[in-house]
Length: 353
Image (cartoon, one colour):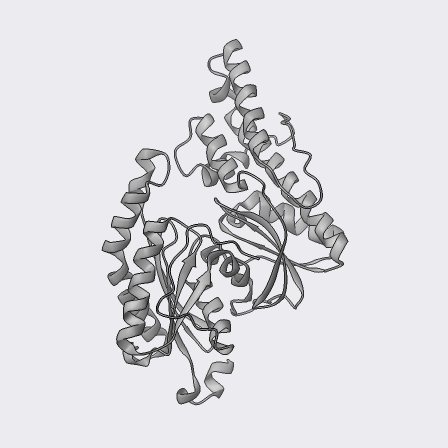
């Protein structure tokens, strides 16, 4: 490893904090390598069918200290030496977008620690971090070459991004309304599935016929996305069939999940294929929480083989919200000395351009 070839005094050690939604996460990055990635999940939201912002903020307050301590401890074990706060060279945190209360917890913690340790503060855009998760090194894992395209699909965002360097990213297309992850979860709610429904739909879809039912696909120009019409189409379809047979969902659940999932995948990959044709880029990545979907991963890799792309997908642990992606982004910003002032504030809806 390149890490072992450098003097310890030359290494940069970054603590990263992610708190944009309902996961409290912390990671340690040293010289571009991830040595810990600790995530505290919040199960309390399941009973409400979605994330409750106030409950999320309170849980972050409870989780952030033990999560950071866990990240320091885990990294120390892997490195064979204790990692002290005094060893940190910078602190990176998610500055935007996300739930403002959740962001505030992570931001204030990061700012306070950076101020106390007198080290730089690095503000990270959550969506840039999802893209750069593809750059996290790992054993026997290849990373894309620049420029590369990335289809970033999460609960709150759906974007196609052209990345020409770690700090130069351009949005080529994005959703004009709902995100793909939201379409999965709300479709699952229509089927009576618990939150979060996306992973459950993925499991049922493995045993279903993806061609059984057809749903309307939006006709959005260029590289834009839309999923609100699809949700409406699914709603009316289910209502009509339940009138004829109240047990329709129970009898056809696997096929319904497979058909819904396939429709979403088709919408995503048609736009990605068009973006690759327009740009001529052959290194193509997936990112975001929905990139953990097994159906999307398989279809993406299959399309890549057909189109002669070089395809890349982060390991599952780096797909959903995590601090390792904040850490790798913070590392590249650290190299550029792209530091944030202590007056920086979190933003719920900061644009990513």
